[in-house]
Length: 350
Image (cartoon, rainbow, N blue to C red; front, side):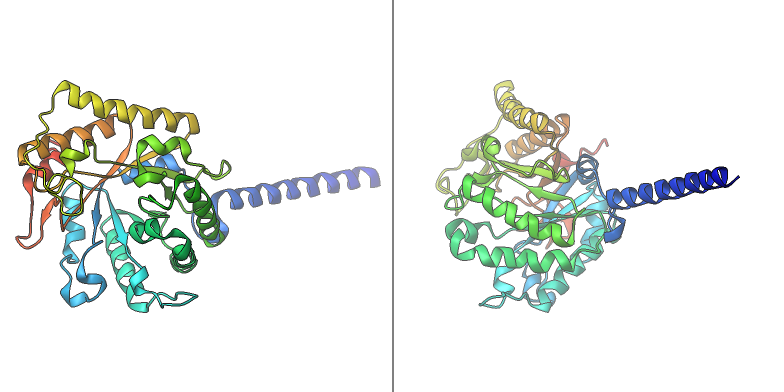
């Protein structure tokens, strides 16, 4: 009897121990300990779907009273057929000048307001660290400030919805070479993972997130909760004609006719991105695309529609550049969609 009793007790202990271990594994796998469910990057990318970049150059960051972007626009964006917003963040001007580069409360108030209202309107949120110009000009002297941002922003948003995604840095380029960016991104990602182990993160290649530099991007193989972003403004002579900051500022009148040859270039370029994505098992976000306002509107509509539809055919999510300022899809002062571009992005028949 004693042997049988001991055996039953042993089996009972094994069962309880097995259940305990299973629960622990499930807890770790789902990220319950952090309050954020472990997400699949491909599913997250699908949820981004069709998006638009917002408030990067808006006076709202200096004064809420001077804001061009109003709270009602989150609802407008959702009702306009978009499923996500990429919030362009320029935090450096709102940090203390010396280490630890503390961010001002007023900056977080605006960021929180944007995130909360986007989520309230069922929009996915990408928090895009957009200080690419400063980082590209002098990466070494701004590295600490860059990392300090994520040391503050990541813990601040650690309990945010799983529908909030972090983008480490927009368009690393110039002196922030692809090789140097590989070093910086690993450090930044490690900082994010300390407080957000299950948060989806967006990372792109160097040289302005160009497709042709994807093969130089190095990501941690054991971190699968990453979406890879690319930007697309080809041909640059068309998309940036007349832009004051561009080498094409004196050139206008360049058309994009939507010929089979022109469309094939987009397909070929996106094929390169798709092949890389399949090889590395990573989802792709087309984080920026568009054509500057100085181009003729018919060409801009053809181009915008062609890029958006081709991206969708390849299974890429996208976020158009941008809601307001330039490349506009919404006329803020008139409080209405710029219909030609809006219709190119979100076909009316849908």
